[in-house]
Image (cartoon, rainbow, N blue to C red; front, side, top):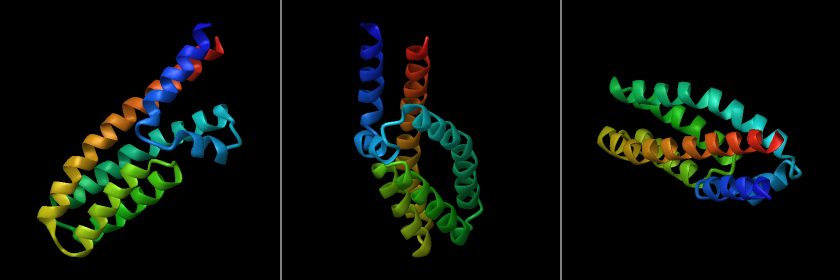
Length: 132
């Protein structure tokens, strides 16, 4: 009986940051595939996050816009809609040349991503626990 509870708990947490039913439907309810997609997401995200931070640090707004655009697409593809909207805000501010707004938006974005990463890790850990 504890297996469904773990799954529901992981689903509830991650459901705060993404559209889990929609994402599961897109992968035909294949939780193993979803776990693999999350693992790839976890591999790619840190480099993009750092690239965005680095671009902001040197005031390279065209690069910040490019990286934010990439993040927006990646997050949207994973049904992480709130994070995608935040990345879009960074992209827009960067394209408008507003470094102060980029930095302000990044603070909210970074907090969202940190919480999202915790939820993804919990989902993956719950999936692995349920396999045993």
